Length: 275
Image (cartoon, rainbow, N blue to C red; front, side, top):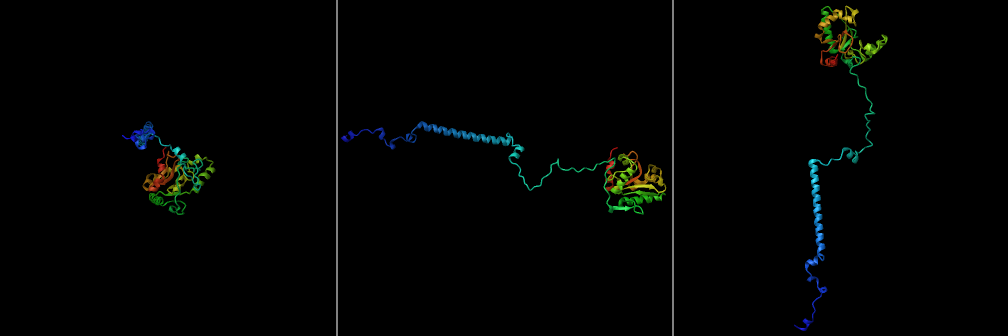
């Protein structure tokens, strides 16, 4: 060993270079602090995983069991109000909408009837004063001819009546006779409620006994006797027999035609009324 070797001193700790420091110590100058950070990171990932799992479970429960109630319609409306347009017309509320009065189905015992169209009216008298609908007029003529062949002569008194005609028959006559509405309705219908509006109804008298016309005593005439026995063969029937369903006075002279679909439908309600 030479003098140079003997005179060399061992290196101090401060003189150690980086390459001579162990790698583990070089990367983590404080080993305990590095281990603590690794644990914290692992815990955070675990918590994030649990949160994701819980969120997935909640979604699954909602889809399969509907455990979480949906937002109410009122809340949705408040959150998302419907767009309004100033150009749209305002719709009146039910409280402000005017009400149209309905036509009563029964007024003083009488049912509502529409007026027959003028183009379908046919005269059954030579002067044209008494008219019926074409179908009813044809059958009436057949019936009158059959009665005349038996020596019975009809006197047609009244057929179709307009609303204006019925206005006079009901209100003017009521005033002349000083009758109240209920009393007048026993023998005459208010305007809009007369069978004569239809063009299917006719008042028949006896040409040989005119003193009984438009009177309950008409039942004692040959004309009534013939009608009672034969009118049904010509599709005519008495509208207001004794103790009729509508409570109208007995009118043996008032007959109506029910010989086709429209006439039968027109008077169906009268047939179905209860006593």
